[in-house]
Image 1 (cartoon, helix red, strand yellow):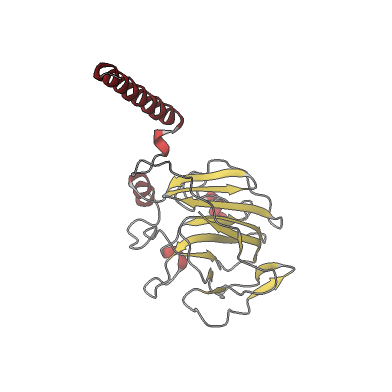
Image 2 (spheres, rainbow, N blue to C red):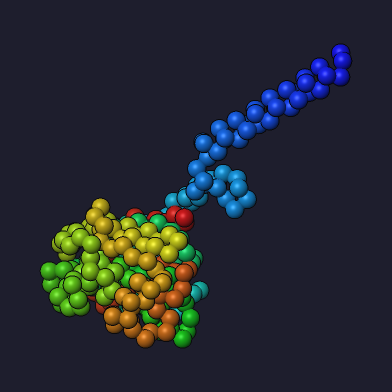
Length: 255
């Protein structure tokens, strides 16, 4: 083969190879969503949800303790009643999980006595300088809307069952069932955003930090509270507000 034909053939082969690589690169880019690329330029997999973890076995209070009393026996005013955690009378102190949670999905059922008040509180920071769980943790309200005065206090029904207590008007009103009936609550906290549901209806949606959150706090009873809503990880608490309340089918999965 003479030099002219050799170099012509080499140039053609090189051009074909370059074209193939360009087409391959273009095809690959067409099927990869740039929004799903990591900082390294590789496709990013969606974060996996953790497995559901049962927080209450229906028989014991294992995995729970009274706020600020870890390692001590729980008050006998917190009892087990037909597969549910039951606060028989006030003065027991709030019940909190031994474990702390940051991003999570929480589900449980609750039932309140007539005229009763309680709450589900999250991101509770356990420290002796805070005397109560609600000094640090936001609360999903548990209430008898028909009889407890809190339902008519606050602003725009923001103290009714299912609401983000004293901070936000409920997205949906009327989601709660009457006193003595079971309600299903769901709380999702993930990457600075929160959603609350009661009996399948969304009752709250909000950021857990930032300007919007700060504005809500500044217009609430929690204005000026040093540690309120400042922690992005903490205990789950069941509130002792002095009234009979029941909780069952409690489970959580970390996100």
